[in-house]
Image (cartoon, rainbow, N blue to C red; front, side):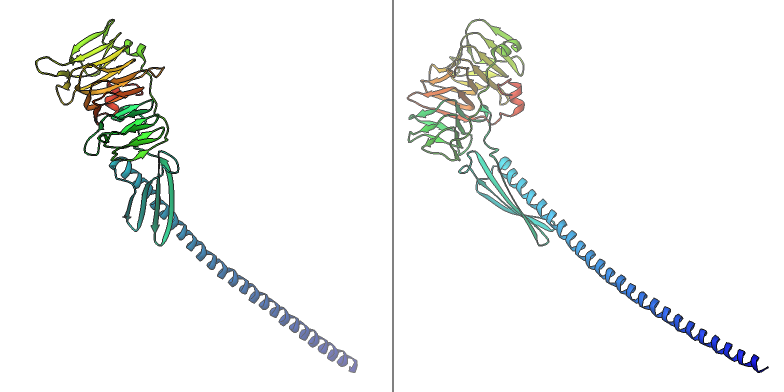
Length: 377
C-alpha cells in the first residue's frame, strides 16, 4: 500500500511540472506574436504616412504642371494675337499689348527683326496663369512682304535708279515698292507712301513705311504665250490699236501677235475700259492716251513680252506686267505716266524727265488674279 501512495505523489508532481512548463511556453509564444504585430503595425503606419506624403507631392506636382501648360497656352495665344494684329490689322512696329483671358493673361511684343535676318519679324509673348509664367519667342518671315508682283505699286527686276520725281501711293499708303536689285529715288520731290523692299541697298528721299534692304528676290513668273494663245477668246496675228477696250465677258483673254496701242477718245479725252479681262501682247503695249474704267467694278490687266512705252503724257488704270526670259522687257516711260488705280512691274523701269506717279489698286486679291489669269496664280 505504501508503494502505491509514493508512486501517486510523484506522478502528481510530474504532471504539475509539465503543466507549468507548458503555461510558460504559451505565454512566451503570445509575447512573440504581440511583438510581431506591433512591429507590423508600425511598418504599415510608416508606409501609409509615406503614401500620403507621396500622394500630396504628386497632387501638387500635377497641379503645377497643369498651370504650366495653361501658362504656355496663354503665351501661344499671345504669339498668334500679335501676329494677327500685324499681318491683318496693320499695326505699326514695335507693337506691344496685354490681354486677359479668364484667369490668365498674356503680354506680347512684335518687333522688326530685319537687323538680324532681313525680311523677318520677332514675336515675343509671356503668358501667366495662377502664378505660373511661360515665355515664347518666335521669329518668322514678315507676312506683309508679299511675294506676288501685283501686290506692289511698282516692281523692277533690275536695280531701279531714278533722279526724276517718282511718287508712289498717297496719304501714307498704296505705294509699296520692290526691287530685286537696289532702289534709289533721290529726287527731292520723290515719295514712297508705303514700304520699300529690295535685294540690295535702299536710298529713298521720303519713305513713310519700313525700309527692308538685302532681302530675298521676288519671283517674276513667266508669261506663257502658248497658254494665253490657247485660252484667248479673240486672237490677232498683227498689231492692234484700240480706243479704250470692251471685254465681252468677265475674265476674257485677248491675244495679239505684235504690239498693242491703247488710245483715248478724241472727243472725251479718255478711253473707257468696260468689263474685266486681260490683254496679252507678244511685243510692246503702248500708252497713247488716258484710260479710265466705265464702272467701279471693271478691271484691266496687260501682259507684254517686250515691255511698255509711253507715246504721250497720260493717266491710266490697270495692272501692267512685262517680263521675258532674257530680262529685257523694259517699261520705258519717256513721257509722264500716271497710274491712278493699278500697278506696274517690269524687268527694268526707266523714267523720263517728267517722272511718274502710281497708286496701287488694292482690289487685287487672289480671286481677281485668277479671273484675270495673271502669271503666278
